[in-house]
Image 1 (cartoon, helix red, strand yellow):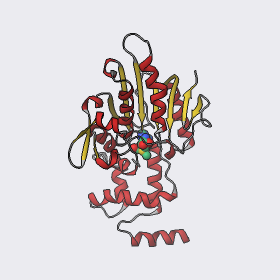
Image 2 (cartoon, helix red, strand yellow):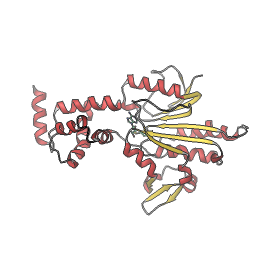
Image 3 (cartoon, rainbow, N blue to C red):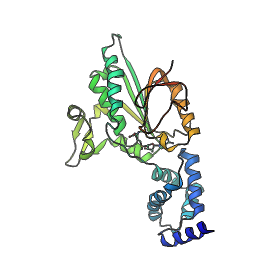
Image 4 (spheres, rainbow, N blue to C red):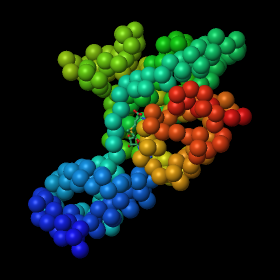
Length: 286
Ligand SMILES: C[S@@+](CC[C@H](N)C(=O)[O-])C[C@H]1O[C@@H](n2cnc3c(N)ncnc32)[C@H](O)[C@@H]1O
């Protein structure tokens, strides 16, 4: 009774009417569509992120907005809804020990291998956000394997959020965001665009392909990967979905391939097919 009175009072103070029922429906839709488990602590964040959509659409109540998201087949508000809910925080060379490991344990051995003909290196950046992660991977590879264009080196970068995937394709970043890129790589792989922005070298960009992909849905990939990055993504999911994901990563990794996950995530307890070989670095068991 008390909670109900409080929620009615809250909704009177707000710009838009936002009831417990609305929040519950949002939690259920987001879980069903994206696998993201929103907790009660996210209530205010959800309100503020979706308020922008209500303002644009000139709506007054969340219930009207949710009708549009879930019911109205003539709009693609579901896409905007999901884009508004996702958290895209990322940076170049974030958790840099993963890039050190990639250079030392994957790229250098490949560069030194006596393999005649085209060498192969396939990497998947799952939940790549706005591109800083997959471009950091590309720079690490091109730095250690300068003739990468003569080989089959491919990075697949995917994210649920269509705005994030569009930002990957634009490949334009603000000067202040490139501070963590090692200096020698800045010189090799970035082009000064303007006083405010830099662009990724188009040659380097050709190492990547971008795709909108919901980890919750079916994955179209047929080949196995040498390396999968899925960092700071599983943190939003419940254990059942994390276990399914790890099963999927296990079958899409070559035996001996590496899985890199975020600093507050773990994989070992949820799936027995990986060995923890470094800080948040897993190797797929043969
Ligand atoms: C915090 S960012 C992490 C970006 C990058 N991996 C990093 O560590 O810097 C999380 C990303 O996961 C994406 N994401 C969330 N749920 C997803 C899902 N079901 N399928 C695919 N991507 C998802 C979000 O859109 C967001 O861009």
